[in-house]
Length: 173
Image (tube, rainbow, N blue to C red; front, side):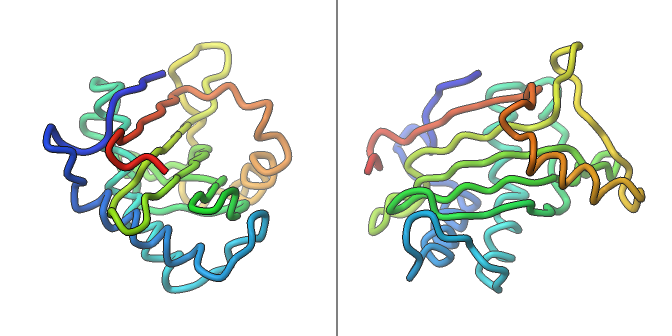
């Protein structure tokens, strides 16, 4: 697991981080802690931003497997507001390299008014007995809904292949 800082040396958020922060704020607006985040244009935009943001933090922590990997889409099993400025997303991410689904769990805390992400935890892939390998279910496979349900029901039992925690000290909330 990695614990490095978000943003550049000047603590400026990247474009994908800035977009992620903006859309997390948008999807959380008007929700009470514990409420589900419903499908919306802002949620779609957030997922689009995460396709770029998550691979960048994973590549910092795990350069070899993530340098040339990214996400092409997400299917959510659940999305909810878990804190005043915090969202949790659980589901599947579609890996761009082989168009295969793998489990993904993301918790994001934003720094409203400052811009960007204050803290994020990203976990990807069911590591299984081999550690850094990931469940990869081909796009369009009949079992995709079964895997999505399994992630929802057994998230606490998943042995995540990749896990990274990042924070931006100047943006703590």
